[in-house]
Amino acid sequence: MVRFKCSIKSCQIKAESFVAPLMSAAINFVYPPTCLFCHQGVVNPVGHDFCESCLSKLKPVHVLECPRCGAPVGPYTDLTRGCGQCRRETFAFDEVIRLGVYDGQMRLALLRAKASGGGIMARGLADVLVNEKRAKFEEPGFDLVVPIPEHWTRRLLHPHYAAETISRQIARKLKVRWSRKILLKTRRTPKQATSPTLLRRQQQQGSFAVSRSRQISGKTILLVDDILTTGSTSHAAANTLKNAGAAHVIVAVIAVSPLRKI
Ligand SMILES: [Zn+2]
Ligand SMILES: [Zn+2]
Image 1 (tube, rainbow, N blue to C red):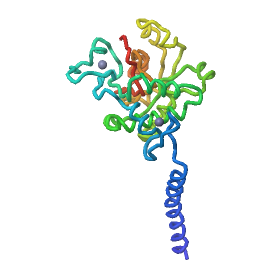
Image 2: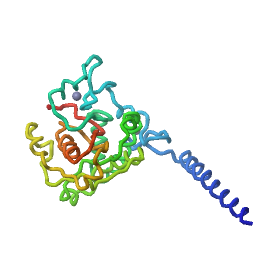
Image 3: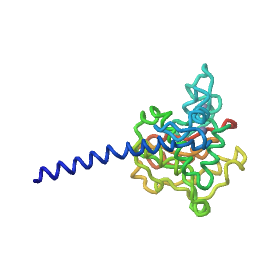
Image 4: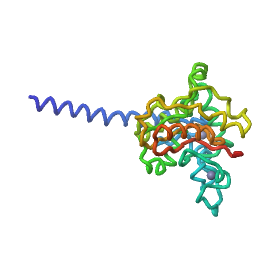
């Protein structure tokens, strides 16, 4: 009797796991999902939310990039100590993983991701980033994913925060622990775009804190933002994490600025 019941239960589970993907495939066949960016092109149902045309514009145009700062570089660039943009800079982070350059369609997609209600776009871009750079994400063996935090007063006015959504989606895809409570922003700093370049590092210095240093001691941390402009924000945040005991800090962003004046 017992055996009969178990057998039926397992059949039900098997039927559910078999029927759900079939239903999903049938719905996708009748109502094909459309592209998150252009809302017209049909999406390849496996892996991402963009049509092939939009996806090709989001993917990196420049095949080679500086591992230290993410800048696009030429084929014969000596990257031993970074590229021409970052060689003279001191960064507390060890590497940058990025999808593209903040220009053209990528710029428009990121503006949507940062706007109110941009969560779906932010998650879609995070999916493309992980799919494109999966080997780079898997190699270091991350222990924890954290976003570059915003000050709580900004969060009151703008509940949607792209860096947080992107970091959470990356953690979900990589199956790595995510937390927004370990790295904190302790004081407000001016928006980077409105600050003179030379002041940016000074403004960010000492503006982050770690609340649970025992949880990051000796760990490899993935620090996530939406855009890397000069690297001063990521540097200050990574510096705080390393001072609190983190062994390695690698930065992941959707795009790097093409007009960096480091
Ligand atoms: Zn499209
Ligand atoms: Zn570089």
